[in-house]
Length: 250
Length: 368
Ligand SMILES: Nc1ncnc2c1ncn2[C@@H]1O[C@H](COP(=O)(O)OP(=O)(O)OP(=O)(O)O)[C@@H](O)[C@H]1O
Ligand SMILES: [Mg+2]
Image (cartoon, rainbow over all chains, first blue to last red; front, side, top):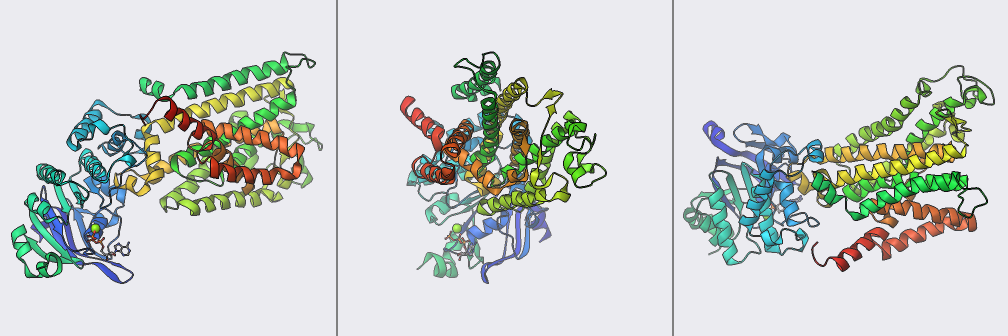
């Protein structure tokens, strides 16, 4: 277990969270390695989003350990501290800043100093401008960069949020249901994008779309009732009887 | 940076500053240089009345900075205004010296009346103008810092925050009413004689006070504008629109709120300090919750999140107030209520907000 910990970017051990007595996470343990791409699947209410809430500091676990990068205890830190450590998140329901332009949304996300003082006196550097340009071309919203984010379609907002995540350049990306609202072509594109950034970054993707998960071609963890039901290759997990029973169906 | 400032200080901002400059020069000239018989002569009482409006405009600007740009609806900004006013009032009291009714060279009249033998520590050094000005800025800022530190750290937001800001000003109202607080009890501070050696009643002094108020309003506007147009302002807007999302991007929301809240409190304090010598009195009623709420209405009427609108709203509403309380004294509160409801229903963006929206969509097409 100790080697697991030191080699890991994210380490969850026996994490439990309950809401009014209902256990959303129940002794959840799993480990994500540095630079690993991991898919998380599981039925509605399995606790996938709650797991991300715990990692990003939105929800405090009742018990258990959540360790980032082999040594940093995340359970004592708040959202902004955790984000500054290098954990970026895309929300299940795309959340962008509706009243700001696409470009400004990216500008807010770009890695760099975040303190109130620095923001008063600094503005965008050439490097920042380039990072924004790069993110815009990856998410293909270059033509819409002056549009208000609130006026984008659901799929475009998904892309924008992915772009914000890339601009943040975190060590660990938590991506909650990225392809909902995307066309098949876009879904394929997203899978390509996520596989290409893995390695340099660790990526944890939650998704129900099984063909997308297959395209990610990575280790899969199936959650059910707040705990790990099965873990392994996509073929072994989707052949698992219990996974078929509770999630995939016969 | 320069290009950026130039870009953000658009035409409207330039017009606003120019208008203040013209007012700041023209009104004193019309008051001082023209004979009283002239049609264009402006009587001194009007100069001070408009000076009061401009001080209110600065308060409105301060409030718009936190409410319009960061979503902090303070219902207690009158407290910062009043504290700045009291600091100035204390300086003015100590300038009276032995010219008071009881002719005590050190103690203000009310202290002699209360049979106090020596000056309370809180009044030390207030005979120095520079010290008093420092207090005008420091006292409101410090209160805002302490209050904000607790409130923003414990993530008090929305209605709850508004309610505790309201309680803050109410608590101060009660405290300042007490004689033993040493700030003149319910009579407050008044009967000022001079400021920096100039008679406070003299038309020249009044005219200069007016010009300084116009200047401070312009400066306050430039500072506020530079803040909201910077990346700092962008983060403020993000906090206003999606606070928790901003946190997940790594921004320390509480520090941003604290900074803007403190700057705003300092501005409100300066506004209060400009108000007092022109009105000639400061008393605890300035802490009344209703005053703070009125300031919110000025901002809403002029246009929240526009700065210029806040200033214009303050002037317009107070102009209407002067006129209405003069003509139909019982009608003012109803008028104010009706105005607020009317603006909320028909001009949710306020006067300036509606005008700019119309101008932008009519003039430039769909550029957003
Ligand atoms: N703040 C909360 N208060 C009460 N119950 C909650 C809260 N957050 C989540 N839950 C409950 O915890 C369970 C797990 O929810 P979670 O959102 O983590 O599921 P999920 O695996 O992401 O599901 P989906 O696939 O539908 O997104 C659900 O039953 C949900 O109703
Ligand atoms: Mg979910």
